[in-house]
Image 1 (cartoon, rainbow, N blue to C red):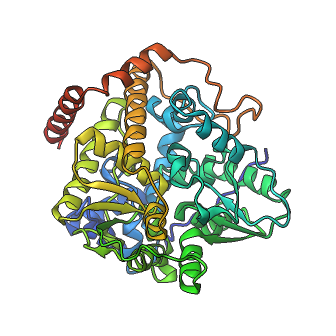
Image 2 (cartoon, one colour):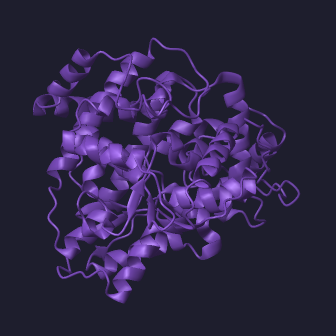
Length: 457
């Protein structure tokens, strides 16, 4: 593969080292003098900067920067430098589809045959030129029943090989920029063979990657037109093509704004405004968290970007996940609603690990309820969260005996897809999952996690 020539997005010539970005950061909140010092360290390439150890990769600093210098991308560049030196912590194999075992492989043990067939179809779709193509991100595979047999998707042909890595979105947040460039090139080569002109994406991150990151930072320009699924839904609701006979639902919700929702500020924050318009159309009351929209805290996942060791990574994610749930619970809302499939996976994982009483919805579920479609919520969601928690604990234990690694393969052999794991102790994994059937085990784990996270904080 030809070497990707990346285009630096941080504008050093615009940065006046004012420190406002790190001073206003809802996580770091650095005193202004320290913020100025840390920005200078990052510019000089200091890989021991505090920012690299505490940032939760949430994009907010770009919105605070008065000079529009893109300080967020400066942080990503330094993480990319660190990756070249140390690689990835072994626990990250969990979300690398070309490593074995990974999340998608391990989950296969718990998937029903119906789910396997559904996901396999998405992975093997061969787009036609006249398709109304929906690019499904790989994290919705974990909760595929959210979109199963819904009339919302009957006009779409759905596609997602897992090794498209959400267009590189979650690796981008981790600062693995050179790998993202390779993914962008592979995807362009594939997509150009599809002969489709328009593609709808389920995820803000994928939409942003195709439209902004690939062309402006990786030098990979796509010829297709990409649109966001929430914009598609809102347009259909406004036109009457999607009817909501069960509205108003009279559910009180608090909205979790994902990190990539802050990446579209040039379009007046449409990523976070459109879902709120949809929720209001469905007759939901919205109570905002203390930190929302441009100030929103990450779901917890983002804390993994600033990892310092394999052992500290998961506790860091838990600490920030607890903070998010506390803010949500303080609103008094019935549920958190997210419009990101990755965040949906993380929020449900944390909800069950922490024993939180607040419910979690994906916005697609809210629309389906307003349409009058029947959902097995939260029973299916909770069961899947327990499946994933068992996998997570299994993977944490396995990672103790592994070394840091580099992502050397972007694609896997499509004939030996993610349904065929190679190195896995199924007995151990099933035993862990069996333990989660007992409330006393779940409650004990929740208390241990909360105590440990409080101690670490």
